[in-house]
Length: 124
Image (cartoon, rainbow, N blue to C red):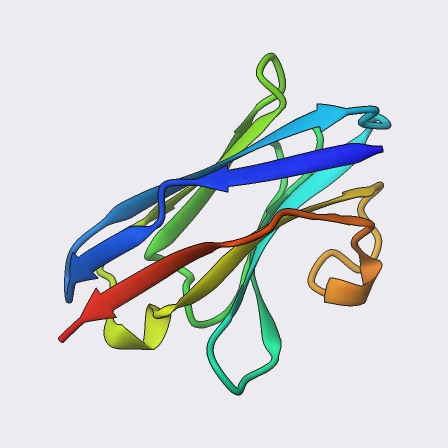
């Protein structure tokens, strides 16, 4: 069983930055893709970013391209999401997810393991 634990959420003003982290523990089958999704109240869970096992491939949702950066450190089984130029539209619960392989990287239903989520609130 894989456990994912997110950290780093909080409250920030418009234009500010936040960094999220996610650490995986348990049996993590290699190679595994790690990703971030977010869900605002009353909305669907949206793809934010994903990174492949080696870190050589990254994928971003259209709304965060150029503002967010995903990275990973396999020595710590961790992935990080640096979020810059935040706006109120970025307010959501952010979830870390992992899956074996790279297929369907932007599709939430492709992911096998999920964290509990961390709240990000951007004030105007």
